Every structure is written in C-alpha cells, then in structure tokens.
Image 1 (cartoon, rainbow, N blue to C red):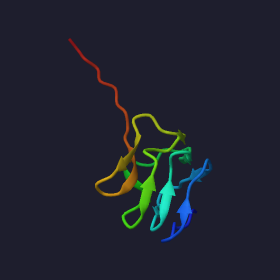
Image 2 (spheres, one colour):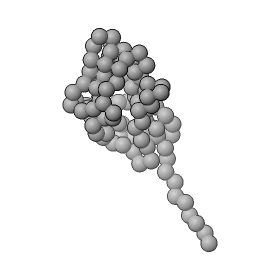
Image 3 (cartoon, rainbow, N blue to C red):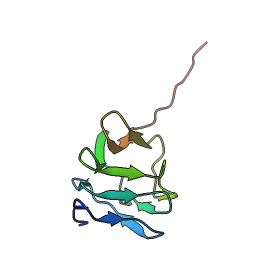
Length: 100
C-alpha cells in the first residue's frame, strides 16, 4: 500500500490514492488532497470509522479529495481537523416503515 509522507517531503497532484481497509497514510511532511482522487475498495467495509490519512505530525492542504470513487451509500469522507485525520465513516442504511 501507500507509504508514509516523510518530514520535508510532499505528496500531491492529480493522481489516484487507492486505499485499502486497515491502511493509514502517516503524513509527517505535506499532503495536498485538493486535486487527488480517492479510490475506495469496491466492497464496503463493516460499519465504523476508518482512518485513511493521519496528519497529526504533518500538514494537509486541500479541503477534500477532488473526487471519491466507490463511495458507499450512507457513508462519508470526513476531514476531522481537531484529530488531524481524514476518515471514512461507514454506515449501513435502513428503511423506516411507518404503520398507521
């Protein structure tokens, strides 16, 4: 999978970041996601939060990925600036039936 972005280095551009469940990109340098495409696995992971990028010791530029491929229904990509992490929050949808 993708390796770390080390101190003093940078990662950015219009490329694709192919993410797999269980992988976290550790950013110690600078990562620009503004023009980057995030590619999620075709099969939705179990319900929960998954850290895609951890920039606790680095810098993230760009508010969000330019595009996200395979984004699942009821799921979202969140840039948690307090924790300095980009997360996949995976949820399962449900149907509400109202009986009157």
